[in-house]
Length: 227
Image (cartoon, rainbow, N blue to C red; front, top):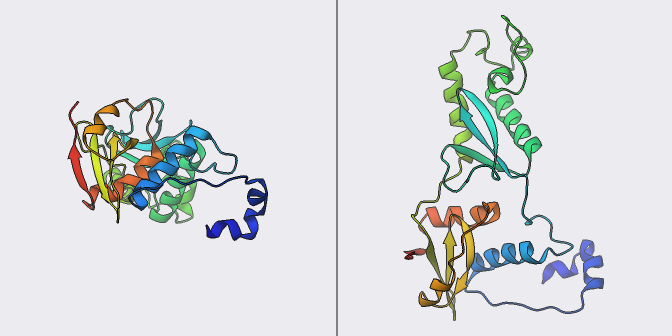
């Protein structure tokens, strides 16, 4: 409740007529429920967790980096994707940051056009290691790119279907039902999980960000569900 006393939240507080709450087993369930409700109800002041219709990622192909969109391929099951970005501009900005940090060639990455038979301009400034002119092999350039991108690799959904993630609180146990990183809902028993069968119509980047680390690290008991 501390944020209701923050100076920047005065406008929100003046418009508040009532406060309700939903009890969850723990912090993970609260985060999942918050993200789900924001997408469903589209509240005026909560814009960060709304669904991005331009969600995209970086993908390596033929030595170049391509920008691919979630509306075209399923990010949950497609390998070799790197980073989640709200739009093409933010994806390109991240790629430029990586290129600058690693002295990668903008031309080889497809960011800029390479001059015919000459090194790129950034090579003359010492900002490119020279994959464009043979000072560095394309294999070395590609390996450095993959190494730099590895820290933002998207993990594919590691199960064949739905799972229930068990979260135990002081007085409440919940099973959060997940499929392809998409949060379907929470129930108090595994029998109730059968009712949560609908398939996700899109990749849920917020669900992925909330779930990936604790799920992959084995912090919770995971039960694979039939069907």
